[in-house]
Length: 373
Image 1 (cartoon, rainbow, N blue to C red):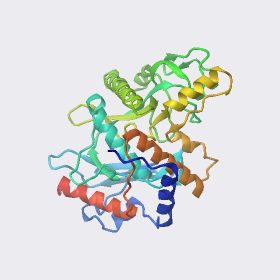
Image 2: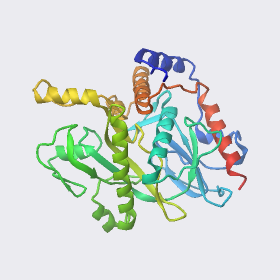
Image 3: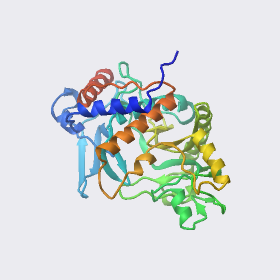
């Protein structure tokens, strides 16, 4: 018999207990500099919004404030010579390109979310990630083949989700635009209402700002080729269908998602980074959505606002450049716990050990398995 889910009070108590013993955590670069993992001593970490990367060769990133940092690491190879990238998932949360702080258990929850989805969807969109013996699905460190990254995010939308992000279809529609990424938009669409069909709406990836573009415009600018985009899009369409069916059986609606892609050493286009997580996708509670549709049709509410399991919930707390306060951190953590339980159909059981020890353990397990190259 499946153990019952944590209820809201139990989830909140768990989060509060974690916060009481949270302690100080160290950046991934500081952990490497401490020689806690001798194999990785001397590597420069490329920090990201929510994940840090360790890889061989040249790299660069932009610090807060605009300073560009360039580096070159020693090779990082698998035993068979394939170049590797190690990623450390953090508990940071970012909205509107601003780091809002850390959310208890977020790193573990999204790891569980990603690993479940990538296995289910590998037949459709592939995966660059390697399964490592000894790494649990909630491990915050993973390793994958270092791909030649394609310069776009593959964004699939089934609904016009209300959003404050500038690249969203919703924001374009509010401005009166009736074409988005090559798709005609009819009059009468409503916030959080369904689109006429599942739309591919790619967005560029850059250090400056993202931009939603029609595929033909990406081809014209040289961002990718039709031979690269079409298989990525077709795989994402098939994956969306598979996820939609799966989620309906869980009482959830697949709203939208974004995936990134790269080219493997064998020339395959495969998904990389997060796959259908609550940070890269939106999931709505179906029962709540259907009830609100009825209220909207009767004129009892002015707008749909379905219960969402996604980062959009956190965006609602964002103000200027402020980080989240303790009560907001708790509320967001509880929503992530609710979401992962609905997605996986089981009780969330976290690893309560200190984050630094989980990072060190995960990295050590990886380097022991990839050899001494």
